[in-house]
Image (cartoon, rainbow, N blue to C red):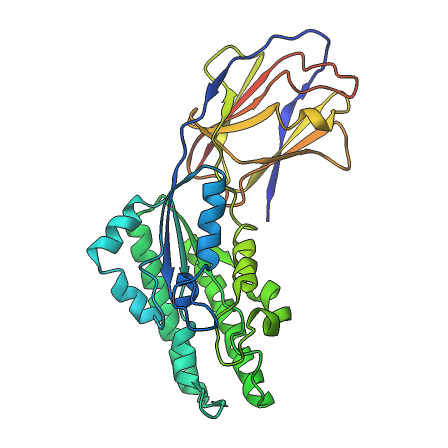
Length: 354
């Protein structure tokens, strides 16, 4: 649940105000490493083992915003199981890339269940409850170990564990289909719990993908999505990830009309509410409110005038949350009321994230 925190001041508008100078943000570059199976490598539904998958789409979006440093999906391989992922993580080249990465995505585990439970020759399921439970526990243990290894190599990276879509929507045997759907629902639920317990991000894919599964998995003889399906997976990722920003922001070291230092530790998902004495011009908000980490890194926050109270601005953190560090929330005199009168005093709020 998102946490709200109201600033303990009422900002005032007036006609005259003092300007602030700006500085340029650090040149943010994201090195992106994709781990996992054929879905991570972008296997197409017609036999091309490395096509344009969701990881490519993510990297293209980063490049479009000018923040992509490098992209590596060569460590993802067709048929890889969760045990195979652990073996991949033993490689020196993989470890070095992970140490240098700012973004890491993982999708792994589906092949464990497909290999064990499903016979493609007669489309039959062979489900033994005790064996299936043991397999689920084994996959969970492998994924937990893999995530912990990645975190040990790079505790500062943004790590995302992806859930799975249902891979066999064309399955004709109704009973087998129901059993396999149930198995994947359980797997996705367990993966979400793993991500939460390990302090990383979970990307729910099935909720957006499965309703049109037969369209996205257009080849009944193959379990890999078409490009539209991979786009859905990438779109789900961007519901949980805000692309970092490069650009100018106010200089936090200069004089500010009002300075506030929050002594208590702020949660990573903290929202701020700024209350003013007059209704805010919504058009002025985007170029007047900034959050910066350590005085150098501009945060991709969401900022908007409250729909319930035009005198309030709601400041939402990046979708992945704030990382530990010292932050500066700055409100400049580019903020105006609905009569275009600017803020009387510029405001600097310093806060810490645990």
